[in-house]
Amino acid sequence: MPLLTLALLLPTTPVTAIEIAATPRADNLPVTAASRPQLAAVPAELLTHAYTEEEFLVSGTASLYQWSEAAQQSAVATGQRQRWSLRLLVRRPQRAALASGRVIVELLDASGGSDSAPVWALSAAHFMRQGDVWVGLTVQRAGLDALRRANAKRYAGLSALPATSCAAPGTPSASWDAIAQVGALLRSSSRENPLAAYTVRQLLAAGRGAAAADLVTYLHSAHGQQRLGNDQPVYDAYLLASLTQAAAPISDCAPALALDDPRQHVPAADAPVVLVMTEADVAAAPAVRLSDGDIAGAVRRRYEIAGAPAAAPPATGALGLTGDSGSPCAEAPNTFPTALAVNAIWQQLQQLLHEDKPLAQAAPLQRDAAGKLQRDPRGNALGGVRLPPLSVPLLAYGTGGQARDGSAVAGRRCALAGSQRRFDSTELKTLYGNRAAWLKTYQAAIAQAVAERWLLEPDAAVLKAQAATAPVF
Image (cartoon, rainbow, N blue to C red; front, side):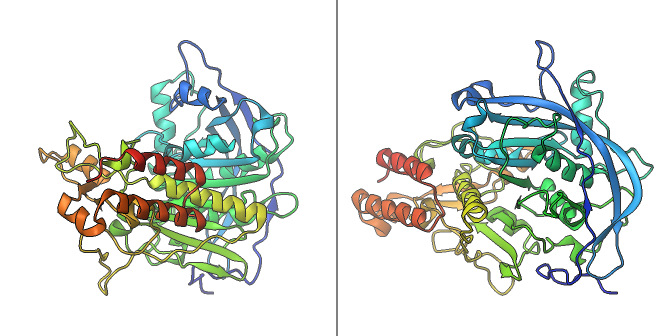
């Protein structure tokens, strides 16, 4: 029988669900003078928001999966079971009464050889001002190995799940059930639950890059089969960022899927799925697509953020106009505020789940017949989600940068950082006439972005404050 052929088709026959019978065990890994978490947050940043951080070793037993040949069912449990042990990093309000009830579980990305938390890096300020709990889960084999290398004693209990003869450096076979079981633990009344004192109203899964590819495979396997006692999914929604690669292999020894295999796509599920792509992602991987819209109860959105580079920029001066001294790149790195768009998308997901308010829709980035991104005369991309710094621009934002010295290491860094060009005085006068006219247009664009739910009020206040002192004209 044929496999699913469209990413938006819902199964006509429900997958047999297995209620999660047992939640995992969680053991606290204490902080000492000689031992602290890898990837720990900056303490001052957490204290400013009255947040705290703890680390746990969480362990359980998982079913393994394989791809199915049955119609309407993309994966089945093999009957084999494996023990697993993973690292859990929890950042939460110090007082449970101040927590929002939302918990974001980020699958940590170890593409660079060790754990990183790109979703936290983008939206930490938003999570903490909301009172959200953030949980980082190490699932990729490279992340587990890097933890043991960094502190063999602290992380001695971690398992690579398992080390088979065909083990790849990606995500181990037992991870799919482990992801579900960790979510069930966080929602449970178990004494093992690190959030036992907190009320969990919404549980959302997130991942960026290779971790987003992990979530595609999770959606094909454990999402439909590992359920809560009321047959509801463990996770209420999913946010996949920068999905520019194929879905993760379902098991260490599974043959590679063809690139056009439907199981490489984000499948239909009974939980909202949002795909967030930067302009750089779209330019690098134009074939990674997700149809937009709501069909038969499946909520799907694909957002393409115009102007956004592959790497989220650090905090910058007013509107990115302060220059960049000492950069290894030939051009100034792209300072587009990607995080502001992502924060707004998080807020929309919250409103969908809590208020049943539909997610906004946005046009994709414009392409020509050959798939090449289209740009205005000044070099900025057309279409997509457009924040005020792009709709009323002072800069041309590029998504590819080059190293000054031509070295490979700097070249990779500069490619991720992107580039930008500040408009000269002639261009500014042609566009706006004078500073007062620019400021009026810019403030109107901020108000419009807030009204259309692409910008949150606290982030709008930051843009307004920057604009008031920006060295324009």
